[in-house]
Length: 476
Image 1 (cartoon, helix red, strand yellow):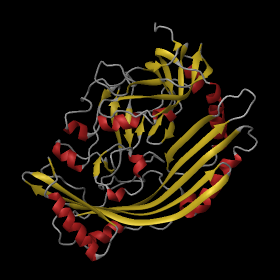
Image 2 (cartoon, rainbow, N blue to C red; image 1 turned 90 degrees about the vertical axis):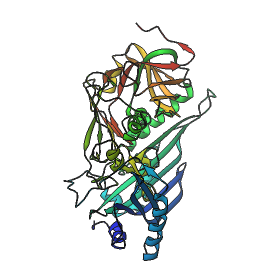
Image 3 (cartoon, rainbow, N blue to C red; image 1 turned 135 degrees about the horizontal axis):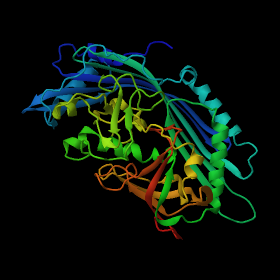
Image 4 (cartoon, helix red, strand yellow; image 1 turned 135 degrees about the vertical axis):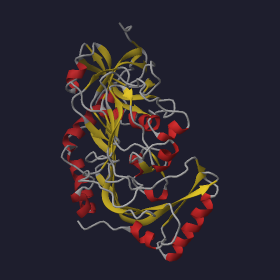
């Protein structure tokens, strides 16, 4: 593959003579999609081609920093000049409590970097999507009463670049894939209503290899949803696989450990006990295939691996340039152009957004808890939660709660009858001494899995609140 285009440098050439500090983040993106209805291809689309840049100006205003920002798709001299004028106006009224923010300079030293480009997808995106769609349908052939009712695969190929007033210029390429598959189970003489399982993921590559195994799991979950009973009611041991944790942990951790929370007097307290002893949690911007991985962050600071929790205690925070200056620190390489949601879900149109301190990929290293089956063997009476609907983690409060779409009762160390309905919830990161998911970990599995913005093994939480109709035994 050829060297990625450096659109940011093109804009920077038109900004010669403009007083700093300023930086430019630019993208050239191509988007391809395939949508399937049942077992037929309903729509293919692409490439949707878009080029754009975001210009940020930092100006001294009454002892603080005025932050001006303007995004544009017009790379002409007039278009860049208009963006400057509008950003200058915005900077006069948008003040931030930083005094002398310093943008990264020179050419960043990034080493070998992480794997973030799927070569097959980059060279033949339309063909790669078609082959993946065919492999997905083939994985369901011969399954009676179970069909994929809807499938959507969207791939984005991006050439990103950053340049600034200190002379930094850098360009790199990356790929992103959004996958959704809805599987429906129906039929049989018992007359039960259909059951459904909905899978979604965000990653960097298309890999059809695991599809036969995944399809078998999805089919089983959809079938089990038809006969599932209500979960127990009370404080019970709960096993959470990475598929569920990915929708809970990153959102809370990235806020609680973000410098924006610290600036507002919120978030974790340094060195406070926020997790079980022995627990380490990282933010890894160089994890292979991580959706938040890149050679540099969106301000040009080299990415790296940061320890957020060390032996259960809060360690480092996540900083961008502005928050680092305001709090007397250095940027940790977490200047991410995000709209405030999961940064992994913001890999499209990042040039339209300003940087903020955000996590890349949250990593919970594997422990010595063994396989999923070995974890279950350690539970006498509890629940395995396979999917939660509307978990809606509360970033500020550090808590989550949602409906159990499908799970399994654990009885005497074995997965038993399926359960659904009711809710499961509790804290994720809470104040020291308060029960939470991370604080009440009793087992950390030994087989990590990358899902969205989280890499984690399966976790066994000593007690979480489950609301259902079935009676649960009192905790010992």
